[in-house]
Length: 262
Image (cartoon, rainbow, N blue to C red; front, side, top):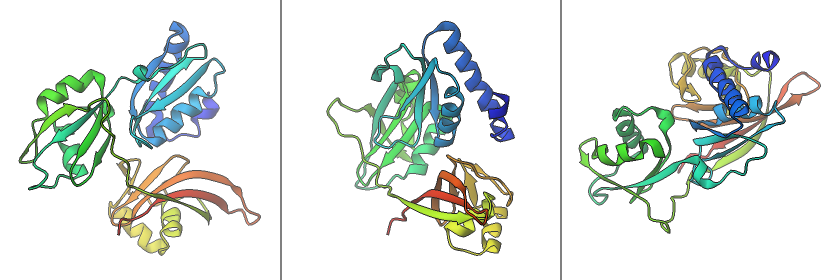
């Protein structure tokens, strides 16, 4: 385990400790445990840790197709997970869409302003006419009662009917392959976004770069598999896989790149 933990970042240690204590609980009680909503990097960590144990498995769900944020179930191998185990509720927001256009950040801000922890809700999907979002069952009633306005707009939240279709993710990730001299944040940004190292460094020190939703202003920050890098004005990059080294000791990198909407 110690050997495994060395591969993770110092500021990921508290999360790793949570995962280890969940793992112990599942082993001791021989019963499944559910996490909060996790981003792709966090799920990668859970899978890496739980993957060390033959007696345990993981499965994740976020209701939406290709959900970015999902809850994970850690369970003993004898157990057969069912959909209800994930304790998910999906809501739709009724609001005067003819007159006002609500965006993803508006909804996210409104949910956080209810005092909710980010781990209690999953993806938020928005199109011209509709907003849908997923929350953990344990806070669903609270959200339904208290989310009555977003900004200055009055809204009404209701559960989605059984047959109502869920919004598709209109984001399109394009797969790309690159070779980089190192996994430093400035090197990867410069290579993938085809810009100079200086420009990449200016974006990082100018606080325009987030890794897994956390601002990172250190140019030498080391990226790892599962990371999602957001560069303001240039979209997002997902580090899918690092595939060994070339003869010249460069790293082969597989990334997903979010196509910019035209």
